[in-house]
Image (cartoon, rainbow, N blue to C red; front, side):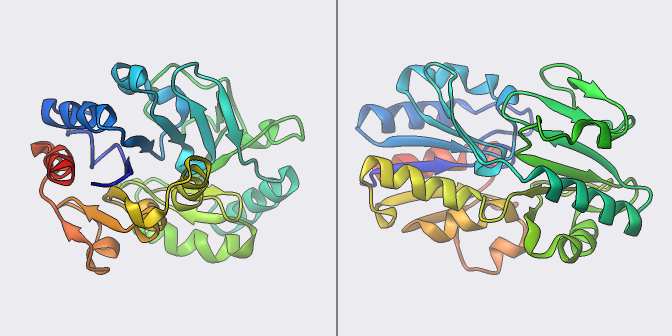
Length: 265
């Protein structure tokens, strides 16, 4: 049996309806009751995690914004936020605007978000805390954990190939969804689900080789590479499929839950 289970949400633990299937829910609760520590690691900001409210009694660790934000699930307290340097964010926005004048931006803080007008994100949890030219929300008083870049008509894969070299060693660039209107995410250097999960393992005295992780997209790669038992769903991005991780089935068929039950024996 493993000591820790970490799972991505969208496309992995959640179905197409953005809810966990009954088998997934039952398996996670069974794992927690067996003494396994449960971690939910997602690109979503914390404000989008009400879907996990039923799991709060088992005290999971919540890693939001691709590991940039760690939250105490029981209290909602932000335990850690890995902020980007404000001047670096301003420079990156300037450089991307030069290369992609059509680009739109939004920023995530631990509990707030701001966006260019027209960014048109799914407004789960309400509208942005501020909307207008993003440059107006990049001051030193903003604790930015993630900068998002969107272009209409340019898919995520293609947008990543443009943005990644522009950012260079100034940040960590990834994406968590295949979208026709591309969306990529930029965090501080070294911020990833894998780095955050390593910190959780250290805090609980767990060897990552005794942990399992589940994912489907490039932002899950560092987490999958960290653990001794990495699994991907059948719809996983080619970047993950090419790594030879064990494929467990479809996210709409509670593949994660079935695999957890197997791990529990």
